[in-house]
Image (cartoon, rainbow, N blue to C red; front, side):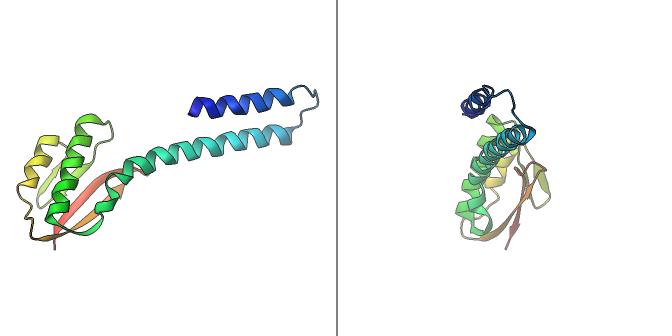
Length: 131
């Protein structure tokens, strides 16, 4: 997708090259448009990653917390973007340790789930507190 969009920008640029008097405003416009498209692509990646987890934000029952932990465990096995899980005195990114935390979660209890984000906007830490 990124290559298609950048290719489109190049075509627009080359079409304008027929006129030898391309001015700086046109070049600035093309560069600005390219930057905006790249930002949107990068934001889409971040939004997609975070959407897998943000639905668990707030006060949730143990059933939902366990589901979230299973998804984080899977993420941490398959993805370079690891999420640290903090519960009681436990802080881990290990997929197995995260699954062990599910045994400590009571289905009938409510928990407060809080997310922290890295400098790029990706969720990188979840804190779980018994309500």
